Length: 231
Image (cartoon, rainbow, N blue to C red):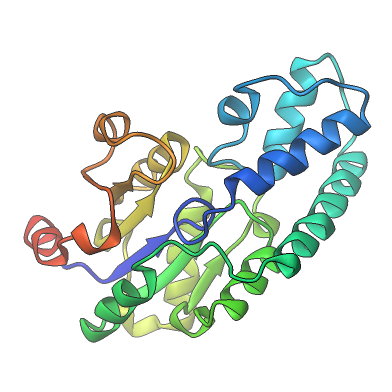
C-alpha cells in the first residue's frame, strides 16, 4: 500500500499549548470548588477532547454533570483559551513544522489534521501561524462523540478525504499519523494506520512501546523509510 496521506494531531504536535490547557482546566475545577490535583491533567486529559477530559475528572471527583453543563464549561474554556492566545506575542508553534509540511507537499501527499480540540481553536491557531492552507481535511472535537483513544476521528478523516478527493481512493493503511500521546497513538493504530510518535509531551522511550517510529523533532521523520514499509 502506497503512502498517500499524513494526518497530524494538533495540541502537542503543532502547538505547544498543553500548559495553557492545564491551567484552564485547573481554573474550571476551582470554579467547581474542587482542588486541582498533581498529575490529574496528564492522566485524564492528554490526547483527549475537553469533553472527555472534564467528564472523567468530574466523575472521579464524584460529580455527574449533564451534557449541557459540560458544554457551558467547554465554551467558557474556549473563550479563555482564545484570549490567552491573543495575549501572546508569538504562538508556541513547534519548530520545524512548516518545513516538514513543505516537504510533504513536494511529495504530493495529502495533509489532514485529527484532534479532540474544538474547530474554532484549531482554525484560530492555523490562521495566526499561516499554516491553514496546508490542511485539506480537519476533523475536530466538534465532529465527534468519541474521543481518542477511539479511532473515530481518524476514520472520519479518511471518509472526508474520499469525499473531497475521490480520486485519492484513500484507505487507513495508506495513512501516516503523527501523535504525541499514548491515547493518540492508540487511536491511529485502531484505525489501521502507521504512527510516528513525536516526543513533545512524553519521553521518547514511552512512545517507542506503541508507535511504529519515534522522533524528537520533525526533521527526523524519514518519509522515504515510511514509504518503503508501506510499499
